Length: 328
Image (cartoon, rainbow, N blue to C red; front, top):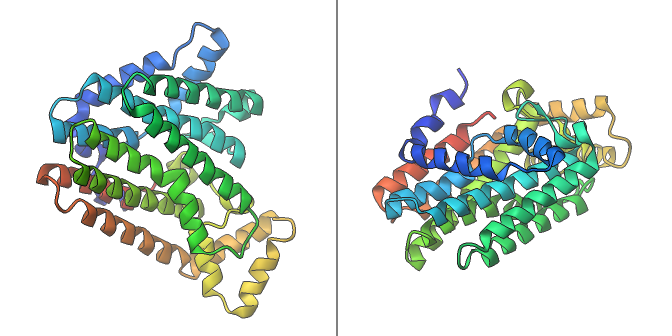
C-alpha cells in the first residue's frame, strides 16, 4: 500500500470547497481559451497539466472557513495563483528539458522552446491583468512572481556547484516554491477579513508547507515512479541541481567519498554516473533524512496555526498531512 493511501485523500480535504473548485474550473476554462487557433491549441493542451490545485485550494479553504461564502474576488485571486503556478511549470519544463508533465507531453517538446517561453509569458501577463481587478492584489502578486523568478535564477546560478550547503538550498526553495503557498494562505485570510496576526500565522503555515512540498518533490526525483508521479524524473542530477537529498549524501560520505562526489560534477554527467550517485542517495539514508526534514517543516506549519479556528486548523492540517505522504 502506498503511503499516500494511508493519509487523507484530496476529495475529503476539498469537501468544504467542492462547489468553489467547480467555479474555479469554469473560470480557468474561460481563461484557457483564445480566438487565435494556435494559442487556443496551446492553452487547451496545457489545461491538461492542471492537477491537485493545492495552491488555489488553500486560498479557497481559508476563505470558506474564515469568511463563509467565497466571493468573486477571492475566486479571481485563486485563479491568478493557479495561472502563476501554471506559467512556472511551462518555464520549468524548458529549464529541465522535461518530456512529461502529468503524463502529458510538455509544451516545448511538442511545439519547441520558443512556443514554451512565450506561452509562459502569455499566462503570466493574463495573471497580472486579472490581479489588477482586485484592489491591492497586483502589488502582492507581482512581488511574489518576482521572488519566484529570483529563486529560479538562484538555482540556475548554483547548478553544478556541489559545494553549496543547506542554507543556499533552503533559500532557493523558499523563493521558487514556498512563497506561492505562503501567499495563497495569506491572501485567503486577508480577503476574508482576517486580522494581521491571523494572516501572518496563515502565511507562516503556507511557507513551511511549501518548504516541505519541495523537499518531498526533490526526494521523488530519486525515489518516485515516473508513471505514478506523472512527470519526468531524474532531471535534478542531470541538470546539476544540488537538492537536499544530494547535499545530505555528500555530508554522509567520508572525506574521500565526498571528494569523489564533488569531482564527479566537474566532468560529463553520464548515465552510469547518474545511476551510481542516485543509488548512493537511496542506500546511504539521504532520502530518509530529507523526509525527516520535511516532517520538521510540517510540524512547524502546524504550530503556526495553533491559535486559529479549530475547523480551519483541522482542514489545513489535513493538507499538511497529504503533502507529507504524497507520492506524486
